[in-house]
Length: 340
Image 1: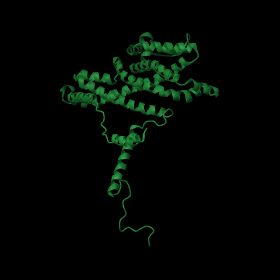
Image 2 (image 1 turned 90 degrees about the vertical axis):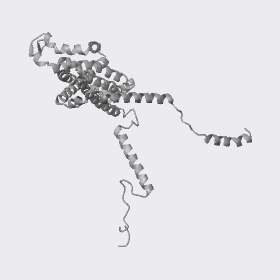
Image 3 (image 1 turned 135 degrees about the horizontal axis):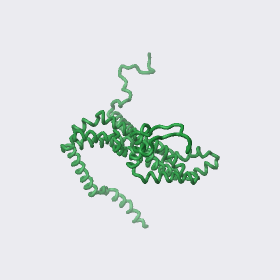
Image 4 (image 1 turned 135 degrees about the vertical axis):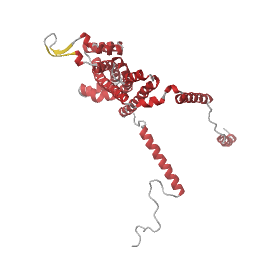
């Protein structure tokens, strides 16, 4: 490079720095966004202006006592089915992971059978169990019975629904738990075994906390699916949300607003479950992420803190007191440390 070229280079850099920066224009994105806004606006306009939605009837039944009681039944079915299903699913997953061929075969057969049979068939089977067994008893196998009860008195509609939902859920929960355990590095278990840690403690303190990161997303999906799937027990005349809505619109003929009542309740409760899933996943991600993303509450507090800081800076620039800060001393106030 000659001396002349060296002298010209700064001038070229200076010329480039004066060029205006023009952001890229994404016309197709703008067009797609405009189309989406138009469609959303048209849909919202139809919700408001179409008399077929019958919103007064919707608001009359949204918080009706019969609907709230049905929502509570739906939540009970979801809770019992989830707790019992995942408890049995964990046992089945451990059986699949054991070294015993018998336990592996039994667990595999259970998962195969209950994933193959539709849920509605399972529910109707348990509902009609008394047709096969008039009495259920407890005693020695192939020997005397010490205690027995009539099946009709023991298994009612609600009990049959809980049994069917739990056993159906256990088959899917077993595969979810097994997949999460297999996702943990085998070296973790080998190192724990080399240190002489008992297998139960290995599973409880080392394997499961790491496996939960892979289990939780799929488990949350299953719980939400079970919550919405409780509507299928309406075939057993159980007063859950969808069945109760059917009964009401069967009396008054207002099908659409009553279906919207059920839809809104399903959306609200599913949203609550999704928020709970977010916080549970964030809790178990502490060991994997050094700086987990802030929660919505933390984001809100940060926005409030930034707003207060910006307001205080503006007040200081004007010479006034800051928000939340001490007020300026009065002229007639005594000066600390002065003459008494």
